Structure formats: C-alpha cells, structure tokens
Length: 97
Image 1: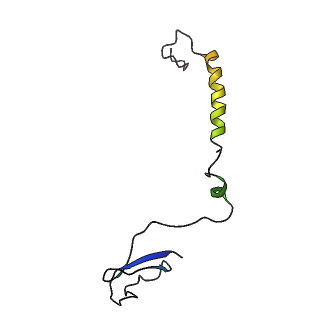
Image 2 (image 1 turned 60 degrees about the vertical axis):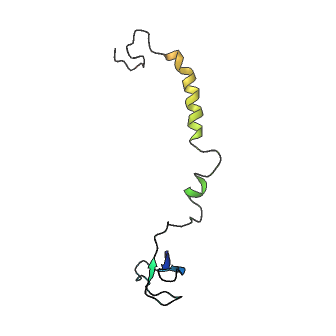
Image 3 (image 1 turned 45 degrees about the horizontal axis):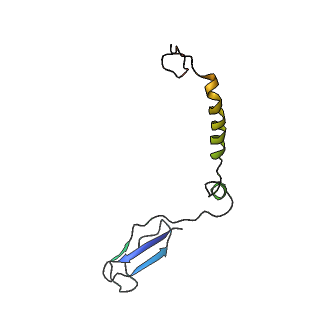
C-alpha cells in the first residue's frame, strides 16, 4: 500500500497516511478538524529488497561494461595493420571506391 502525504491548508499540520489506492482521499484535518486536509504531490519512495539484478548490478565497483572496453582497446591496437589502402576515397575501408 502506498504512503500518501497530507497537509492542512488551515493550520499547516502534515501527516503521512498508509492507504489503499482505492481508498477515498482524507479531507478533515486530524489537528484542527477543518475540511482543508489535502493530499500532497511527492516523489515516489520505495526500496527494493531481496536478491535480484538491482542488488548485484549498478552498484559501485567494477562493472561488466568495463570488460568490453579493454577488449576493444586490444583490437584497436591491431587496426593499423589492417588499414585501408591509400587509394581508397573515404579512408574507412568500407569499399565505396
């Protein structure tokens, strides 16, 4: 169930309320009794628990994306040996000439 933040427009009292999505919004302030208790717009707050991809991936430290970068660096060091011929027009080895 989501937690909704409410604030009274009359007295300024604020309260977080655990409600079902289908429950009607509160309207009477528990502090002053006025019908000016309004739901506030807040950022979603949640915490993922248990084991899963979010617990192992995207955490600090070495990432799997770093490994292909080092492999790509090794293949680029071999690239000058397979360079495009000097007569090639665009110089990329695409075969457009």
